[in-house]
Length: 91
Image 1 (cartoon, helix red, strand yellow):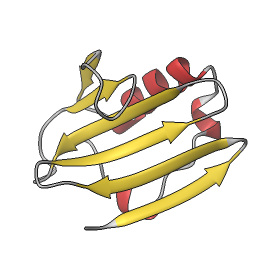
Image 2 (image 1 turned 135 degrees about the horizontal axis):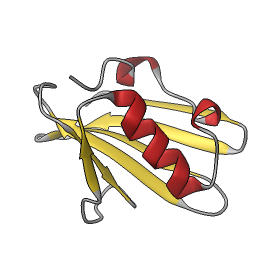
Image 3 (image 1 turned 180 degrees about the vertical axis):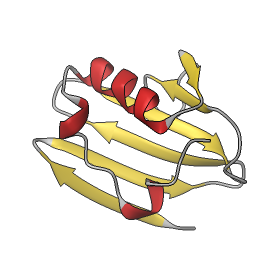
């Protein structure tokens, strides 16, 4: 299993892969958010309040998913650290 973690501006991002999904999970002192995509990497991105939470919205583009995740965290999208292995998420 691939796993990477990065922290910036008080937000920790953890990227990992399960048997079914690629997951980018964010945690701040106030909230959590997650972006998930199928393990093949070609499906829409699902934004959730947590890695195992219910899907809130789907996006084609990584930037849009990051915007929504940042909103859930009460942060700017530019403050979200993105581990290298997660940079190619989205369609």
